[in-house]
Every structure is written in C-alpha cells, then in structure tokens.
Length: 248
Image 1 (spheres, helix red, strand yellow):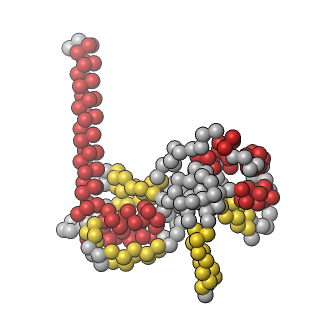
Image 2: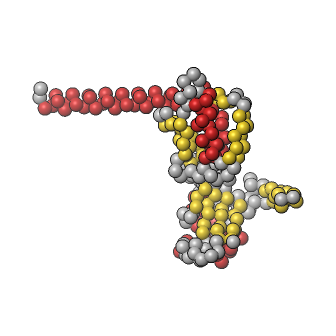
Image 3: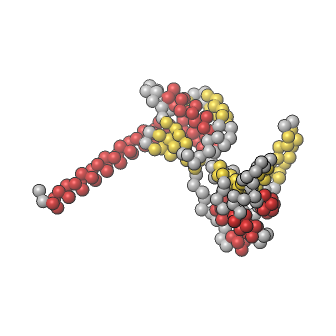
C-alpha cells in the first residue's frame, strides 16, 4: 500500500470515528431532551434555594422516571449562584422541564442538554449598549466613575455615595406599612434614564460580585471592620432599574 493510500485510508477512519461520536452525542442529547418531557412529577411542593431545589428535582426525577428510575442529572455551571434566593414551587402532573424553567427564572439562567446531563448556565449579557456613552451622560457621572475604577481595592465609599445618587432610579408606585417594615413597589419599565449592562461595565468596571447577571456589586470598603457595597440592580431587564447602597 502506497503512502498516499495509507494517508487516505487513515483520513477516512478519522472521519468515521468523528461521525460516530457525533451520532452518539446527538442520541444522548435527544434522550436527555426526551426525559425532560416524559418525566412527569406529580403533586409536590419544593422549597429552598435554587441549589436545594435542584437537589430535590434530581431525586424526584429518579422517582418519576418509570419504569427504569434512572432519572437525569441536573447541575449548575460554576458561574451561577445557586444560593441567590429562596423560592417555593408547587406543581401537579407537569413535566420536569416546567419545574426546571421555574428554577432558571429565579436565578437569571437557562438550561441546556449536555448528553445525559442538564446544565443550568447564565443567560449571556445583552449586547445592547448606549452609543457615545460619555457624551450621552452629562450629569458628571463619567468623571466620578473614572476615579471610581482607578481606586478599585481602596476605600471609595464617598465616590460610591455620589455615583449612587446619579445612577438610574425607577419611580416608586406604592408604599405600604406592614408589621415587618415597609413594602415599596417600583415601575421598573420607566427608570429615570437607560443604562444597559454593558454601559455599567464600561462605567464601573467588572463587579466584585456578579449575581447571575441580575445584580452587579462593587466593594467600597474592602478592608477594615466596616463593610460597604454599591449594588446595581437589573432583575429581569437588560438595563439598570435601581441602585442600592449597603454598609454596616
């Protein structure tokens, strides 16, 4: 067999192996997608953090995967904060996919089928941004943010206070006194002006804590006994809806 023939034969083998691998992966993905629809979880009430609820769903997936009771493995991508909140889900006779969507909605995530695993991962940042951002902002925030970025890792509480007052604010729609405090609601669709997530990253830099792309948190006093943080909230929107200033 000539050298050219040997190389050609090897190439055919490599292609065949690659195609066989693709077929196995597609088959595994198809099986995973199918299980999300065929595993029907009956009347159950789940409570806890998204991470705790996923652990419960993994157990229930085995219980209701009849007759094999194999279930399917659901896991978080490391970038997702599975402890970000507490939630309660009650559904009856619905497929696993519906339960999983509720978990994803609670922590700004989406899921994808990876063979026999389901991976919960962050929704990518929107590419929306403000054209000519520094020209668009005329309230002095650009200069303050430039200094704010330069003092990362230092005490910048004073700068954080000034920037907090200049960030977009959503109008208050109601305020009600209750036993535990005050419940305030806002019109998040009408902030004082629009700053997209990409805009906030340009102005303030990378956050010290990124909570599922729904909240960017910036440390203001990283050392000493006091703690302070500037938080820019997005929630389900691709623009800032409210800032918060924490200290203790």
